[in-house]
Amino acid sequence: MPANDNRLELLDQAFFDSHHAASQHEVMQVVYIYADGIDLDAVRRFHHHLSRGLMGRLIERSPLPFGRHRWVLDPHPPDIDVAERPRARSEVGDWADERSQLPIDPESGPGWRLSVLEMTDGSAAVSLVISHYVLDGIGAVIAVIEAILGLARDLGYPLPRSRTTPQAVAEDAAQTVRDMPALARAVISGAREGWRRRKDDSRTARKRLPAEPSGRRDFIVLPAVTMWVDADAWNGRAAELGGTGNTLAAGFTAKLAERMGRPLGGDGTLAVEVIVNRRSENDTRAVAVSFARARIDPAVVTTDLSAARASIKKALTDLEGAPDQSAQMAPLAPFTPQRAWKRLVDWALEDPDQPVVCSNLGDVGEVVTRVDGTQPAYIYARGTIQGVTRQWLERIGGHLRVLIFSAPALNKICIHMLAYQPGVLTTKDELRALASSTLAEFGLTATVD
Image 1 (cartoon, rainbow, N blue to C red):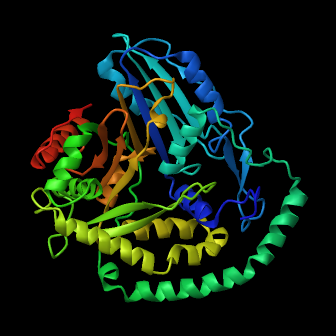
Image 2 (cartoon, rainbow, N blue to C red; image 1 turned 90 degrees about the horizontal axis):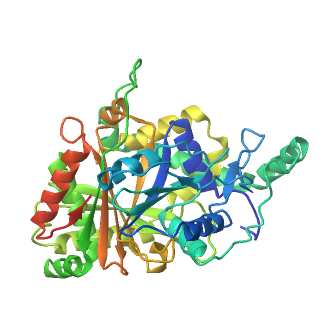
Image 3 (tube, rainbow, N blue to C red; image 1 turned 135 degrees about the vertical axis):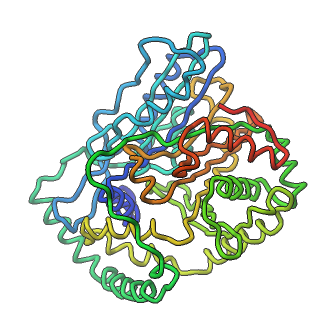
């Protein structure tokens, strides 16, 4: 897009609209834990700079039902939230869960929240929660680094409702006309994709998701647990098993999925979606990733990662060589009605592979951890979903997402797991026990929250 063009990328609009139609709201959270308290004034400066970067924006819908959404500046960024009373160190996980469920709205705001908790033992925690429709993981890392360094971005976005309604209608209608050639190509691509799906026996043969239950809905916070592993031990074990740190991350995800009871394919393998970063310099997209699907045999990963490494390499090669179907069909996003988005989300959830997700942010560097200018004792990051119900999790058959990154200043690998398996794993204590024993199968130990 041209500089200062505030239209959302079509894939960003598709991501937002599809999740909105399905009543899903994904957020990311970063939690910093300081053993000796924090410099609150420095955290306030960090908060100030966050609002002047990629996080200081909101989504404004077009007045046309088929128009392009646009980025606008957030004129009222949220105040920093300092807890009124200290809590015990053992409660920091519960506090983080509470912060992750506070309302976040990428349209009306706030699109993010920064919170501070002082604890009774003198330690402190900082929580940063961000709407996933504003930024993805790597985008958040960049925004945090820029805020810590005191850097501001002149995104050139207007304030909300800067355009009059007639002006917005005229501009968006003209843009739609200019987009018609791309739309025509997308229609052809969509027709081919629809034909391919009808011929896809593995999907059409699978029993559809059960209907959404009516009546009472039991809202829950997805069980989440964090482990910190010594980085030298992690990388050393990966090498001993014939893999890399990235391969070990995917192997651990597959093994945990197997032990949760996630379904295996006919060949005994599990589908693991490996997230691939696509963010380039000066990239302002909300989501800049691709997904490479690898088939990993969980039965062998604790003793040999070579097959997993080969499978991931093939998945990445296939991804690079295949046409980007999502990009080809993206021009259809503004014309897709809410009901169709909901059906597309259900279709994705009906994937017979029932893949689990491994998101590896890699080495996040030393700056990103210093929100008050000093290094914390621990840091973790996760993606989670707000407003999840037990009925929805049972309807889709469970959930597993593992996020891993390296914090070199702490010499630690952070592993965060978000998981739920009906009848098997439904509590944080169950996840903590299963994750610890799974890691032990790889010959590794960890500090577990």
